[in-house]
Picture 1: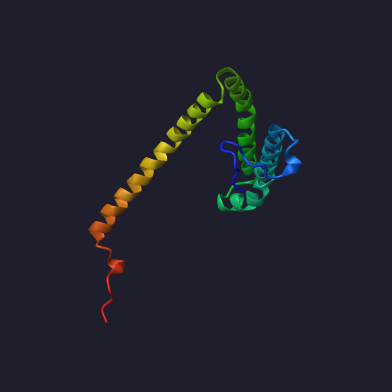
Picture 2: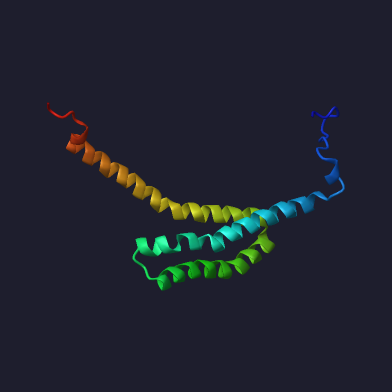
Length: 135
């Protein structure tokens, strides 16, 4: 339904009109957080045995790796909270994106190197597997 008055949003559902918009955002964020925390905390058990078997790790070593990831979050949480309170979310998110991009940058050069080496290898080899077989 298009509102007849410009710059005025139509009311979609009258039962939520008395509910403060912020509480709807809190409910949506809580639902997303509950799902994310459940997948992060309990979803690891689905991959536990395949990871330990594929990497030939003991259960202790696999559990230790997961414990370190949780400890990292416990250590960085107060630091990020302090930075958010002091500077606000925009500069903290900018720094986080730049740090994440800097972490992925070496992987980009590895990928470029793999394409370069495979290109040289294929050009020197002449792709013998793609040639038709003699009859």
